[in-house]
Image 1 (cartoon, helix red, strand yellow):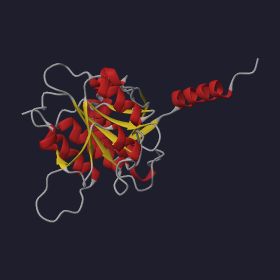
Image 2 (cartoon, one colour; image 1 turned 90 degrees about the horizontal axis):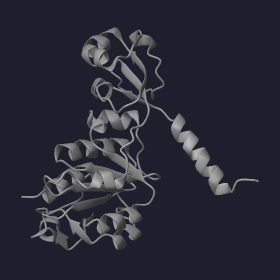
Image 3 (cartoon, one colour; image 1 turned 45 degrees about the vertical axis):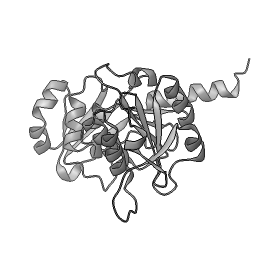
Image 4 (cartoon, helix red, strand yellow; image 1 turned 180 degrees about the vertical axis):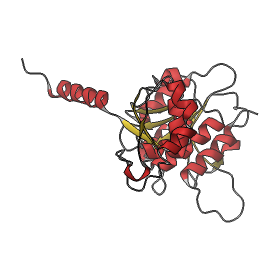
Length: 259
């Protein structure tokens, strides 16, 4: 009996995911990946200089590195990649389910960042750094139209990718509805909104809060705007243009923290 098309496509996607690997590069990204027991590590290429700098992390990982000459660094990286003499082939991290990441640890009200079509890996990497600094439970994008886990993203995240959950889920609107059912207050960032983050969270900072940020330029999709609980803006002074999405994520997350 011939399998339905959707079954075949699901099996193909599963096999593709199982075969997928990522090349991380740069001293910070490689060091933190080597130290991460949850990261499946496959192949390590380093120059002698980088091997000396990463000696402790390499020993801890138990890996046997391939020592290569700087001019013969043959890891399959983009030619513009600043690899600093270190590249590590890994499997993408599995952060588990939305529920597992969103529940929090009970010590304070959780915060999440949701990304609507933010595709630039450098922006997402910077957002992961801010999320780690300000204690967000996770950064959540979509399987399509969001930045996947790449070497460029990991390098910009400067190690945060190994510690800060980054989930890519099927549908952002469905994710928002699921979070609302869990008790989250979901706020969409929009520079033209009437309400600031501070005003929206007055007497509500003990709530679980998710902040949704859109791509630079188009912003939030209409479906996203219709699904969030409220549209809010970052309070500003004087003439205001716009913030880079990674800067906006940092400011918004800080503004939302319990006090």
